[in-house]
Amino acid sequence: MIDPITAIGAATAAFNGIKSAISTGKDIQSMTSQLGSWAKAISDLDFAHKKAENPPWYKSLGTDVQKNAMEVWIQKKKAQDMREELRSYISLYYGPSSWDEIVAIEAQMRKEQKEAVYAAQERKEAIIAWVVGLFAAMIAIAILGAGIWLIGKGQGRW
Image 1 (cartoon, rainbow, N blue to C red):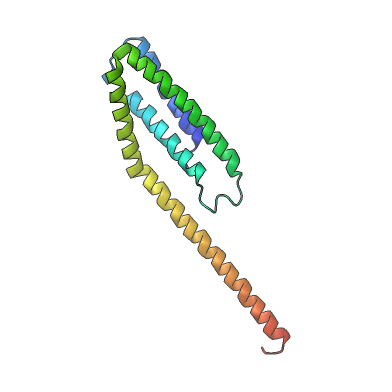
Image 2 (cartoon, rainbow, N blue to C red):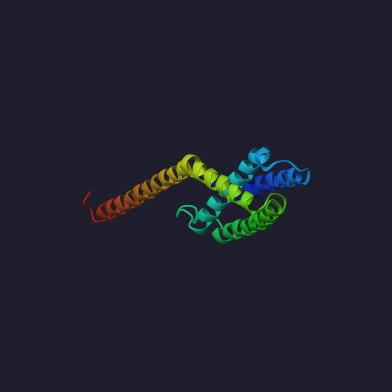
C-alpha cells in the first residue's frame, strides 16, 4: 500500500514549491510540474485513505487497522488544509478560473494514477489474498485429514 507519510511529504514539498513560485510571480503554466507532483501525491493519499477504510482481510490479522486509519485520516486533513490554502493563493494571484485549471490537472493525474499504479496495486492485493486463502485452506484440509487418520488409527482401521 502507498505510505500516507510519504505521500503527504511529497505533497508538502510540491506545495511549498508552488507557494514559492507564486510568491516570486511565476506564471501558473510554468508550475505544471509542481502542480502535477502535488496532484499525484494527493491522489496517492486519497488511495491510501480508501484502502485504510476497507483493508484486505489478510492485513487486518496482524496489524492495528484503527491506528493506520487514524494516521491516514490525519494526513488527509493536512492535505485538505493544503488544498484550501493553495486554492486561496491561486484565486488571489491568478483569479478563480485558474483554480479550475488546477482541479482539471488534479483530475487528470488521478485518472492516470488509477489506470497505472492503483490498478496494479489492487491486482497485487487480490493475488496475495488468493494465495493466503488457498494456503490457509490447504492447512485446514491437512489438519482435517490428519485428524481423520488419527481417529482411524486409534480405532484400528488403518
